[in-house]
Length: 328
Image 1 (cartoon, rainbow, N blue to C red):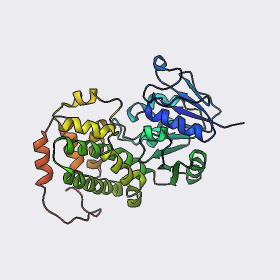
Image 2 (image 1 turned 120 degrees about the horizontal axis):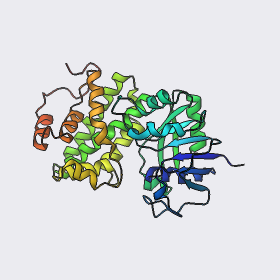
Image 3 (image 1 turned 45 degrees about the vertical axis):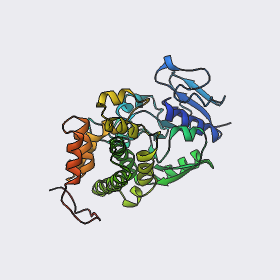
Image 4 (image 1 turned 180 degrees about the horizontal axis):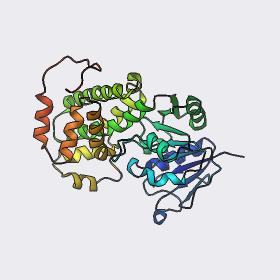
């Protein structure tokens, strides 16, 4: 009998992961929060990819006899869905962000609300449409339980989506959350006509501040130089399919934040993550100048020219940061 995989969340990324899970040979139960949007043969966000018979789409309570549950719910709404995860079934969190009210990463939310559910997180440089199309990709599955991480890698890997196991849950989750904020900044840079040189510099310095914060939180620098860090950062800051980059483009071209958000087909996590990430950095006394500027700009506290001035007139220093380079 084939094993079953539960995918919770039927947006573009959830649909893509359901298609991927079906390619592992599993029967897939794709759970949708909004029953009014349930289609008959394809999903609204990915209409070019008809669903095979091995995928069942429903808004009914999910089955309990599944090998794992892929949670593809935005971070800020994940808590409301966690009660539906079957007890004892490993939950793979596929969202990227920080819970604004608690400054908790997704796995912290899971452990707080569902201690009976083993947890892991999936993160890496993956656009939904390319995964749906079965184009080559790689990602990381991280868990504090390495045995669980390796089992999930074996369960979910295919020749076209190569997965790597990791025990660095902090580094993997921070990379996935922080890259969205830097991607908004990268989009603003291009949208405002500041050039490719400026974007390359911003991405590089963005990685430096992400790593600085990661070390303060206990992450491994190598993780932030890997798929869940640098890999995801590069894709999100340069790929046209990135919602956070598109959000930044609209802002850089002069659109207001709410106007820019209204034009997006999905959630731009960088907008809701910026202030939470900044608060987390302040707790650890870590200097994150790009994140600070983006948070202030999104809240309307500074203008784009003021943000540029803040970043470009900072005191000159050596390039290589160390953990000691923190805010006073």
